[in-house]
Image (tube, rainbow, N blue to C red; front, side, top):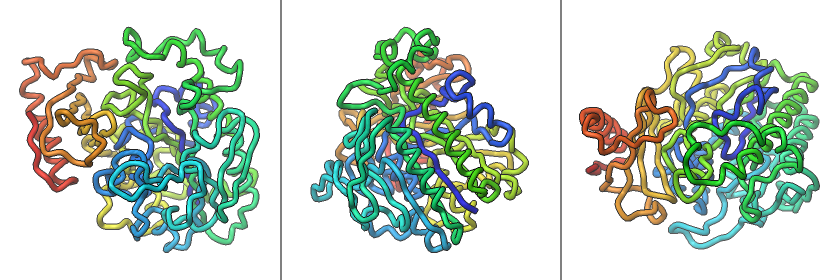
Length: 440
């Protein structure tokens, strides 16, 4: 079975709808939509590290941006797939090679070629940049190939990344099954331009689009940036549709499973000083869609085609899911859980556990009713991966307050609820991080 992970950057769950992503909605009859998928770490590098390793950021030590993956890890996603006989390929943003932060010796590869030993075992086609936002913008840029040669491109970035991926499909020889990860930058903001870069004029149709309820009434830059952001998402929708058609034209649709998701969401500077790095649904809730003719060949997925799955799914679960589809062994140390098992049992995770860094040293859980978050006092979550002392920070009743505007952390009526949530979170930390912190 061929497996493709099509990855966007900073895409909110609520952008998947008829107006913004019509192609996704048209293809719903041949897809599975996961309504309750959440990130495990709402920042780019750590989220990607979790996918490549199958464990949380505190376990793989990539707990902030600017820390490279352990090159000696034998159980990365790509290495396990290669052992199973797969060709493994990667296109786009990597964000796991440079050591500009953290405890390792400084090594800045943000705009340089990524050496083979820092590619986590990808063995076939490689065309990537460690920080794609630094090597490109809406008008073009460059990546580096398998032999460390610079490959320049001109035109809309998401179109060009998509073209590289379609070229890979065109040239695929079908002698081995393949895993391909396509890592787009959109709809992430272009940092040096301080805006979400869209094709000129494509934001016009979204200028009268109502703002999501969670943003309304808060400070932030959504009033100037939301239309640009949606235009980027719609462009991705067209890219993805073109890519799916290429798979069908190649004649490999029936032997392919495609997963579309994102690393985290976006709150447009309404919840902290930038765009994510918080436990709010705007940061945490992500799109997660499975499609491809190969779903018909998997008993657990076949029954859900054309339907929505309501169970909790973590971004971390991508790793085990991909290995399960490939019928590859899932390493014992993985915290990742296969979505195939969840579908088979029609039951997702009991709740979501999140680690948060770079705005705080934080931990959070999301249950069917509540979001509960704690953070270490006087810490921005930059110098260490774990904490021994946390203070209660956020509590939202997601049934009564879907926009999460009313923080109930000091509300005495929720004293018993907080106590229950606190015990769940402490048990997660004990099991995953191997420490027994205090929360006050």
